[in-house]
Length: 117
Image 1 (cartoon, rainbow, N blue to C red):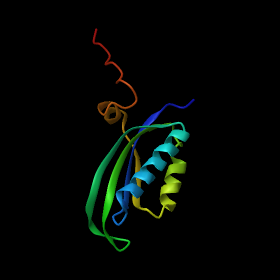
Image 2 (cartoon, rainbow, N blue to C red; image 1 turned 30 degrees about the horizontal axis):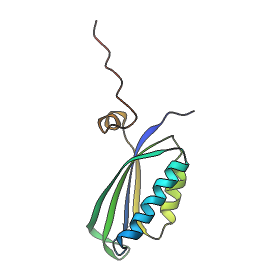
Image 3 (cartoon, rainbow, N blue to C red; image 1 turned 90 degrees about the vertical axis):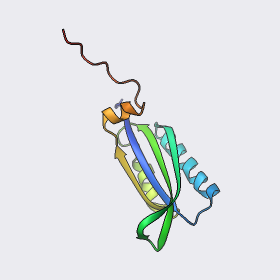
């Protein structure tokens, strides 16, 4: 079994969508992560924001950030589906460094520091 890793997934949905459509896609992403053996401890909805520049003839989008714990490779299917989803303007998955994952309370408690002796 591979070790779990912490990831952050930011998804920018089309700003023209209504809240219920966005919530439906959020639920789909969460279900897909869980079916791949991962968990989504936190979902942070930033709401509607203006873009710095026009993307696909759109000027605003609905931002959502997921904190995910999963094994390496488990998010490949999620990445592929988001790339194909019409509701998604942009998305990005990053692996969080271990110290940042522990700071956010992901992946269990941080390893105890070695005692000087």
